[in-house]
Length: 416
Image (cartoon, rainbow, N blue to C red; front, side, top):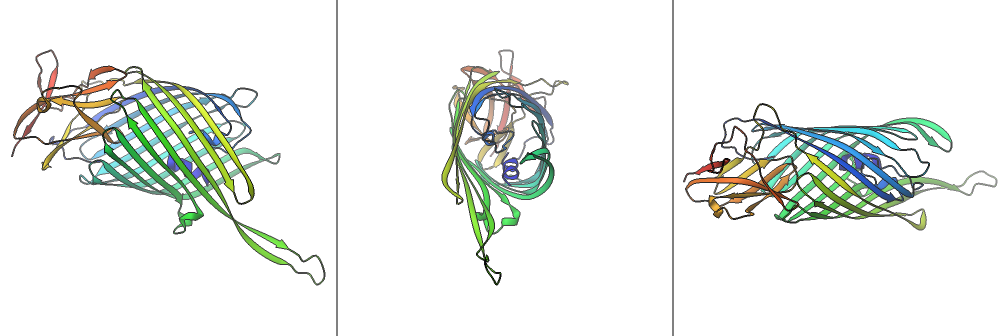
């Protein structure tokens, strides 16, 4: 149940271009060292094991590719993970792959399917696969509500219980409700509820939940507070008495409740456009009706992340601004698979830096609102990260003009 919920826990504009399509790619290499008392706190494995209580390292290579046109978006992610433990424990190693498809019906509603799988091996082997249709609703420009319903398939090989090696397979049907909102371009709030469809409508019998509060600084630095609560209930049947004659006794069913409470603090600091440093502190407390003693676990880790954005052949790389000019105010959306903070600079703000912030409304999708009068406006998109600034290039599908300095400006025409 816990593994299924953790596996699960792991768009929208009107374009002024008749038809356009684009690829974007990104690659990251993460190196991490840390100390943990329970591998359940590991973001990749989430297996309950309190015997580790020691240092570990993680090396992860992940690649992401995104293809999109005006209404469709396909996102593919894959990578390899290697995690050695200090001491005589067996290392974890394996890989994962994700594939998501979304179709935009209008400015407020999109739907699609998310699939993924992973394989890891250590003292035992674990295989996961999940697939879930999704429905997204944007009640406001900076708020997204997402519903997911699907199945999770798990397989364990050579799993040892009481010195006996067993193989097992199971399937869990799951649901997820996720909310993301941006009160301002510096603050992001998210919340998610994940559970087993068999428990509906009695959600309290088993669920996993998480809420986060993130603050993004002007240079791309980010700090995030994570709060989580998992709750599980089991029915236990006991028989008392019946030792005399005639035979008999009393059978009693007891509902046992287990709870996991999590508190975490995460931070990332971009050194430059390619290198970021990160730190993660997490605490976990386990409570159960079966005992009066609580179990406390923690993990602390930090590392460095290298980011790359490979160019695409054919001269079509770059961003495609998508404008909605039919809602009173103007809205611009940009798909961008990269790090840092994006800003919009142009005639509408007298080219004053850093400019108008673009908020990451959804993954790799940045949004800003303007209130422009009739006329033609030239503009650029600026990326700021780790104190460095870089102009983001536009694709060939975007209408551009010479900026007079050897580069190009995009142009938008506002008509009343």
